[in-house]
Image (cartoon, rainbow, N blue to C red; front, top):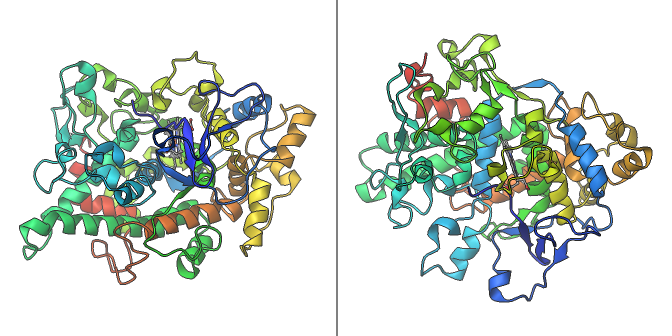
Length: 532
Ligand code: HEM
């Protein structure tokens, strides 16, 4: 499958940062930096990354430290939070939207340099849902007609009939693998069942917006109008509901009301944004700590029956949908277990607390199955169970080393110099945390090195441990500023269009994820939880 793992990063001003020996570390651990004046083919960037802070040259932990720290991080532990578990996979969906390389679906003959630039830049335009739109020949396959997105149907199973509109569209091609493959612009959205069902919810959201447009909107404009409404509501929900759950709300307010202090400050709003590596390789990987090892998935796979492993199995990206060409009906999501509809005053759409799923706390611990990822989830190779490359924490720490990411301490100093108010974590806080990863298995000298130059991802997660499982300080600032810039530079932008007010929620200030789901699923229990 097209995996998450990018084997090289094109960083503006630095060129291509990659690993030197076949995707693994070389003996002295240095990343190779290709000359910026490499041939056009070499230098064509896959995606435009930038460096927000300083380079972390000479401060990267060696492989021994990364292995031990990653093992401790992915040993399980940590607790749940108040955040409903649906937000974990909404986060993954958003990440894919932000990092989607549009050229994968729209690289035709006539792509201008300006379009190429735009296509390979972060935005929150839902290109991962829309591709290049229904009138583009490459993207037409995602659409049922000139304005509705396609949905798929499930496979009858366990006495439950097939259900139309509850799986991603699939079934192009003749081989079993091709039949299974989801027909969506970003195949990463079929990496696990929870993100796949989230993508499907977004398809439904768009289709419902199309269907409820006033008849005064002329046919030729109905798709474009719906897309604008969908995108702006989605951004509103991210700003007011998603971000304030994962980041200290005062930081989000400060960035959105007073502007950015550290990232692309003062650039013209419509200039094409870049993606800071500090966000992509560290801060926004916060979502990995929110993943549970098991879910109360639906009425059939309840009480932990929806293990993370099965969520991989019932996807075509990581495994094989359980063997059939489509999702079996018994695996349709029950959204009442993933989002709390009591927030929207719908007690009739609530499940008892013991059936509800809460995300794991944002902290330095990951659930143990993430030590042994399915190899397809990161694009292989097919390495043994205990190979560190299967450990997501090791991958994240190693990726940071590859691009010589700034350490947590460096970023704290950098942000303070930019006028951001924050308190640096002390060495004791970094060492001991608060019910997070235990560093005592590192040798004394390894631990000293790790606490002196702490990998940014770990630092940010430790900060969250001391803030009830919400990013603060360095982490909150990097995340809020990156989102602000990506929204500002999107084609439809609630940052630029300050007059926008949501119209699909309970009032003109409120549009949360529960409102999006209620709208998408018509507020109906038999659509939000068809298995009862
Ligand atoms: C079961 C769920 C998930 C799995 C299996 C997964 C797995 C992965 C893998 C294998 C990578 C590539 C690692 C590498 O650099 O080699 C990755 C990258 C990344 N993940 Fe996740 N991830 C999951 C959920 C999430 C969530 C919930 C978030 C954020 C809220 C997230 C954010 C990111 C980011 C920002 C990257 C780097 C950029 C990118 O490639 O998209 N992931 N993930």
